[in-house]
Image 1 (cartoon, helix red, strand yellow):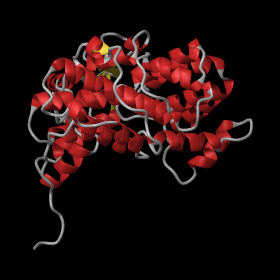
Image 2 (image 1 turned 135 degrees about the horizontal axis):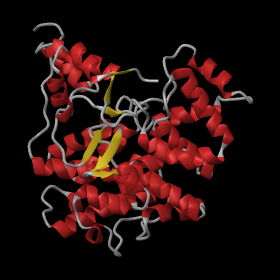
Image 3 (image 1 turned 135 degrees about the vertical axis):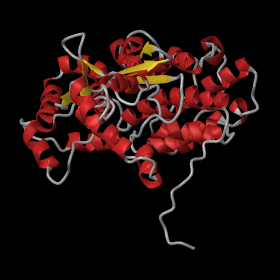
Length: 379
């Protein structure tokens, strides 16, 4: 389990007063986690160590630049998504609670601050997706004009945003764009019963956004350059495909394939040889466990003894709990979806967040253009 510190211990390690520690919490520099005593908060020891290291670096440009880009301190203001005390919120609403009843369309409208009826009306735009990989198919089936930076009419912009998500759904499922709810489109394409459709619905909502992750930040950078929101989604897809982001689902699939015999712990021990962690387990922003994964896995764990054994063995060996990637792969396998569908669900849900990040960046204005610290040979 993750080591934690009391407020007094955390303040001592940071060399500050408890009042200053609380100020750090209010500014989002460090998280305070609830304990069994509602009056007491705990602080992850590794997070305190990172903050202490950042404070001691002073203003040395090279160290500051490196720290800011590697799970660094907050660098941008946003009203879209909040991660605090081990919970995820979409514009102030708990994402796990929202996922109990909301569709991806409802979550998207909330994240975009645009009317749902305008974004996902009965009229369907977009062509049937061409073949090829997901990014290529989406690029080939969409165009820039409906979400270009000059598109100012709110209704048209909303419709353009909704069309992007519907087209991506068509690319994921291999069907023509449809006005049916997105999770039902997936269910129809994959032959799922109502319970399976509900599981997909919840997964899509829980994937919708996650603050300044690699793909979300990429989408903001693209939008800041004045590109269309279509271009922002294409950029997000490219970043998501990486093995340290949404491509992690393929690594989890490979991990799962290699688990043999009745004892998952033995297989996991062999796979840990030569590596420091198991793919898909543990998340720096959730020391107590990823709430998105917990919500998706709860019904699956109740039904699947094998899944219980695997996750229990992984946590026993590493102290890390499943992250979203593991939950998406577990859901894919439980529902019998095509290989690669875990990534497809991740991309479809997250497209709502890429558009939200792009819309907010447009409102914020300005080009995202950090400076580099040059360390090469002098001219």
